Image (cartoon, rainbow, N blue to C red; front, side, top):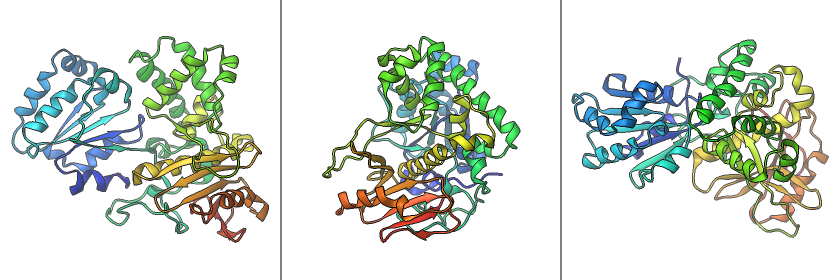
Length: 411
């Protein structure tokens, strides 16, 4: 069964009609399944560049793609190319076909890496394409109680789809096994094996086979450390000392994670207040389940005793990143930390206002939990007027005049 994805309406709507649509995202977030749902299969050519035989054919002769498309019968209106980064030269062919006749074919391209596209093809279809990002399943796409009213509470076009939402899951399961669509559908014991295989396949397919880095052993060591440090401010010098890998190499490895859509740099909040800020960025892996597997942790709820607070904080950050990515320009996620020790886990930035968001593992929020949020609000009165404390409480609670505590499944 296909479950609702927030991008469905954007990909099938009139805004992107006659544009080349590129859908980027990490492996197994559901890009191909989404496009198969958006387009009519009877009117669609699907070219999967995963099989080596097909890939080698178009690497040797990119023009074969153009000839194949030109020979399509009139009823075939959609052309879907899966994993376009495997043969970047096909971007030139797509551009040529689209430029010759913008109404004859609708092109949909997916990619799980931007690295090869940038390094091997200067043509990223400027002016001709709309670029979308698909994330793991977000709270917007799940069943659950009504969300608290705030600017990032509801997705655009939320009533436009009749597709069912993904089933709700308990917090522990969500934090331990993450939000990849396929993993969510599995029982916990097989989900653990799937996540471990995901990490191994990522190293094999994205890193070794694509020759992204020369030393796979060093990268494997780095990936475990990056997973353990996920959500923290990144100290390359300390990681270099711990791993024995040069800081410059570690910086490049982090770039690989970003380019393959399995991680994000989170910048420090940039609006100047009276307090001196710490500006070293944080790094966050894209899914808590993949993070746990990459860190070598048991994929079982027993880890919540030590990892629960950190995982909940990361999950909230990932939710905000997803929502900012979908809402687009003017929306961003940052964090706030001062040299004196005041800190806010996440700051939701939008054209209208900035909202500090603190995350606590507690089920009984108290006014003291809001003190750093209040400090942030005092520092930025023009942009920030309210804050949220996301925790495990059963229902929303007003913990201060400007701060509302909200259950994790209602924010």
